[in-house]
Each structure stands twice: as structure tokens, then as C-alpha cells.
Length: 387
Ligand SMILES: *Cc1c(COP(=O)(O)O)cnc(C)c1O
View 1 (cartoon, rainbow, N blue to C red):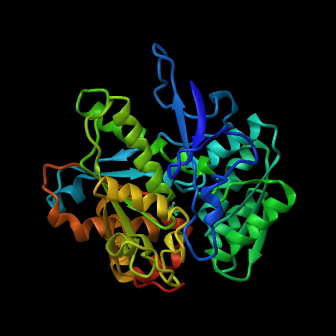
View 2 (cartoon, rainbow, N blue to C red):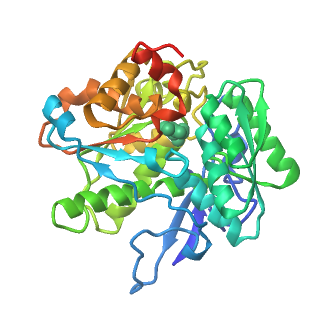
């Protein structure tokens, strides 16, 4: 298979090689305060009779570091199903990734790329989970990791970074400032950047979840692959959502599924740039404020790309209050045994808010992207505890 980067806006094609991030032309439009322009997509071509791998990726299997990323369980939560009258509800559980979040899928591919090209250091900005994830995967791979984290990031995520032996640069400001500082560092030093959306491999790594969901649902039906009716994706920068969409697009193009699911962008009311842009047609920067720190972003880095995909496929946007997130978190924990962090509980809360529009026979996957133990402040409040 031959792999390259392609710009979805102008169609320019680039080699997948160190130092390449955005489209040279479309990336010129970038300015502070707007979503990234010129975000590239990985594309592949196969010869006519070439067999496509079950999960095609742009880095060969031998370069992936030795830790178990992906292949996470798809739960059939019997008690929740019963109480909600939703016999086809599924929970995709990425809380059990090595670092406790979905971000490991992206870190894993970026680490494999670094190993393939003999790169020894990776830098990134994060709201917390991307940092703890890259530090974790870097520890398994033997890579040096430098992370830029806002000082307000939850303690557990900062402690993970230090436990895994990464270099922590605390930024006196928001995630958006950390993003700019880490990019300055990468440009100045030539260190590989794992900044989300900016490095196209972060999107590519996240598509793997769609393959797993379609495989598991297919197996349950006694066939090879099957698409769910709906997928609820907790959304901040929109990179997980872009990866999920890309995965299902590929499965459709390969003839493995017959239709795409309905994609739902689930956001917190206090950080809902993508949901708002779906309604108004344009991005309007507003300072974000939500207890769901992993999906709290002022400017969604992959917003332009995701918005065009949601439009193309009639995707939906829904947002909920912080109170609804905490209530959904507790309901999910007590009703299923799965304790997820607030960003993930947001996806469940958005499902609860929207489920009247979904028939009981339709299958629904709610993506639970981070462990509840990563951020216990809000969770403690939700159960009336004080620590
Ligand atoms: C990063 C993150 C998200 C949001 O992903 P985006 O790509 O920023 O939209 C959701 N849940 C968790 C746990 C995360 O760490």
C-alpha cells in the first residue's frame, strides 16, 4: 500500500515524513483565534489485487511500541439498557487504555512514526490526557517527552506525566496558550510535535476505534462488520470525532459496511464552539468554561475539518450543562459499573438528552474516553462528598 498526506481543502498531496504537518498553501491562512486550516489527512492506495489489512495504518506494525493500546471492550450495559428502554445501547470503554484515556490511540501511532524515523523526542500541548498519554507511551517506547500543560490541569494527569518520566512545562494560562508555546518549542528545536490536529497522525490513530466498533457489532450479528446507527463522541478540538468519521468512511469505501452511522458531536455548554458553528455556520471564539476539562477549548483546532464532515453527513451537535454532566456521570457509574471522567460523561449526558429522537431498535454507541479517576473533583461533588 502507498500512503500519503492529502489536503482535503485543495487536494495537494505530500509525503508522510518528519517535519510535515499542515498543507503549505491552506496553512497560510492560519491566524490566532481560528481553527487550524490546512489540516492534512492520511490516504492510501492499494494495487488492484492487493489485500487490504484488517486495519490499514501508515506505519508498519514492527515500529509500534510494546504496550497494549486499543482493542478496548464494547460493553452491553444490561441494567442501563433496561432502565432506559434502550436494548441496543453500547458503551465503548477507552477508560481501560494504558494511560486511562482514548488519547493513547494517537500517541501510539505518533510513537511508531518516531521510531520508524529515528526520532528521539516528542513535544506537545495538552489539557491533561494527551500529555499523560504521550508520557505513558513514550515510557514504553524509550522516547523523551516534553509536555506543555496549563497549571489548572487536574492533579492526577500531572502526576501521571511525572511518574512516566516526562518533562513537564507548566503554563501559566490556558490550553490555547500551551498549544502556542509547545509549537514554538517544536519549531525552534525541530522536535516532533504531537499537537492534536496539527500532527495528522493524531487523527489517523483515532480512527482505529471505528474499526473495533464495526468489528464487534458485526461479530455480535454473526457477520464480519456492522455499523452502529449512532455514535456519540465527546468533542473538544474535534480530533476524536474526525478520527471516528474517517474510520467509518474508510469502512464504507472498502465495502465492509453499508452505511455510515449518525455522528453526534457531544459538547459542554461552556465549550460548545462546534455545536454553535453547526447552527450558525461560523466559528466565534468564546472563552470556554466547563468542569469537563478534556473538552474545554476556546478554539477547536480541528473545527473547520469536522464542521465540513458533519455538514456532509448530516451529523448532529448537542450540548449539556455541567450539572447534567455530573448527573449523567453518577447515573452511568451506578447503572453500569463504568466510572468515566466528566468529558466522557458529557457524551452520555448528550445521549440522554437526545434519545427521544432515536428509536429503541437503533444501535447507539456512547464513547467513554477517559477514566473517572483522572479527575475526581467534580465526581466528588456529584455524590455529595468533600475532599
Ligand atoms: C481529548 C479528549 C476528548 C476530546 O477530544 P478532542 O479530539 O479534543 O475533541 C474527549 N475525552 C477525553 C477523555 C479526552 O482526553
